[in-house]
Length: 393
Image (cartoon, rainbow, N blue to C red):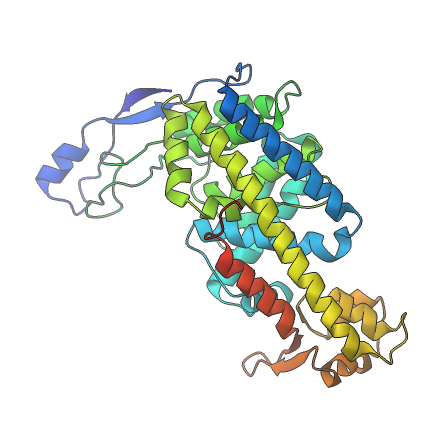
């Protein structure tokens, strides 16, 4: 990566002192990313072994979940979205996220996490055709609700990471890192997507480099981190490593976010090993965490069997209980959707309330009536609390 000097225009009515105006009127250094479409990827033998182990574990976990994908694919997708958001200091309880998903009544952070679920869903649906339009669609899904003006659009202004803020909107002069000027973004992204579509590279190194180069280009005004991590999952799906589920890789990144950010910096300095090792380790931890979450949810379902005794094996109440593993908070509409019926959902909901599997709640502001499965929500919250602290066994 090289750098170029760029002039920073300071409006005379910016409210800064004359000294600040003189200083900020000097050039700053913006990155110029190298083209990597034809990059020869070389990593150390140790990192190559880590990456291959991670790829094997990802494939194995995906195969394990293949037969049981219906109950757990969505919950793993939400868990990855929540962990990726947590890296950006956005967190919410499992209940708040579920409520935001069904009726938009959650906290601001919960709404943003639900938007990240939409971005992840878009990423996976576009995995077979990774190009610039696919990336723009992921970003649009992420940002449309919170900032429609920038959603799905390459940035047209300079952005920067870190640094000391001056009066007013700040400047890139003291930034930790200044990505390329906006005019370079379209060409840099076109080159990156050509790299993403290559089929001659080991998967984990390719995904790690894809992510690091994306974050270095920083093509959007906001949402780069979450879009870049969604892009990793699109690439894993596109290469066939994960066909059924989304491994919560971001829970692995949460175990050492300073190390993750250092690895991105090392990549910008020309060291590929650091980010490949970081992503490989995060994938391995993500598999461990994913298995733990699935095991706990299965235990919850087993415990419910005693309460469900007396109901036919094909009863609607049992099917609704199964649906709670995917949707731990429901309303009447969602219950009908889970059961595939048009009416009479309340008698099946009531059957689960009577058995203490569901607990009802009315939002006094919106008058929305919902029901939640406390045991499932508890498992999800415990999983979130463990994320960022769990290391490899």
